[in-house]
Picture 1 (tube, helix red, strand yellow):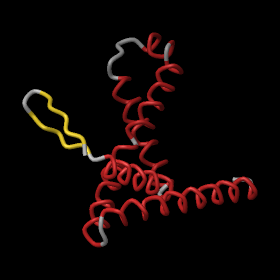
Picture 2 (cartoon, rainbow, N blue to C red):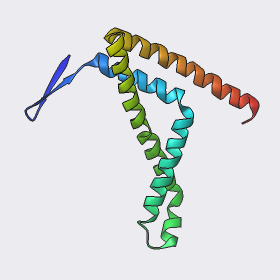
Picture 3 (spheres, rainbow, N blue to C red):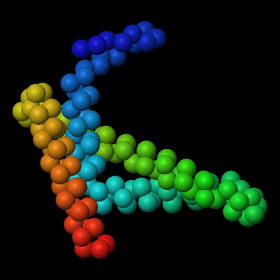
Picture 4 (tube, one colour):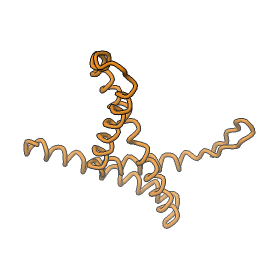
Length: 131
């Protein structure tokens, strides 16, 4: 357990908890790829709409459009992680409450490996079927 003192506040940092939350988040991110893709598409759409309102001329907007759309896709992919981080924290704390701290980490590892294998198989199946 590490304690950081910043501006008279003590922050308790436990690497085991952070690792478990990260593993659960990764597992959920891989398991729910349809939700991930939908969330990223909605964020990209919203970013493009919000940025369009900042330009007054259509010529200036169209001139830099490809670069801005690529940047908005990057931001959307980064921000799409946040809900899965909260779901991973919820999963960690539920398993921790029911089974204990070491089980939360162990099941996080197993679920991340299992969901990774599932995602590889799903993508291979899509490539074979021509989708």
